[in-house]
Image 1: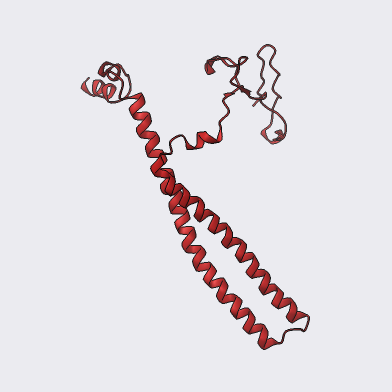
Image 2: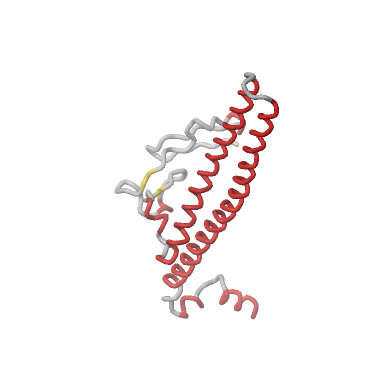
Amino acid sequence: MTSTYDHGSQPELMEITNPCDYDHHSTVFPPERTLDSTAPADPAASPVGVATTAKSSFQDLFTFTQARHVPLLTASISTAALVAAGRTTYAVLLGRIFNVVARFGAGVVQPADLLAQIAGWAVWMCVLGVGMWAVSTVNIAAWVVAGELRARTARSELFSRLLMGKEVGWFEAREEGVSGLTVSVAM
């Protein structure tokens, strides 16, 4: 399949004759343009292969977050921090176990002491594992619930802004949807 691009002064796309020849590091499409004074206002009027994008800010992530969602979001972030601390603690415990094994290899620790020390660190690792399991469960549940709450808020706000202000005639004029279905079933 051969693909080329030619729109006036726009750069030409490279020609790909075999998909195996495609180098993912090379540019196939021209660089994206942002929404500014040089970009067309209508995305349909932009040339093929050129996307118009607007830059998002960090605040855009919290557009549909309401004040009642903040405690759940705080719990999500806190449990994520606890999970990260648990992973760091796991690495420290493994380091302690390897230290005991290395001292045994150097002849500093006797076999009976080796077994007792490793058994002690193994108990701590089991306690950490159970704690990490519980905190990870709460972490995932908190993020899922927080995301679902924001999705519900987004759906209800968009529904109320876009559809609730429409007159009945607007719904009846649609070719698709319930009114379109009713007309097609009636025939």
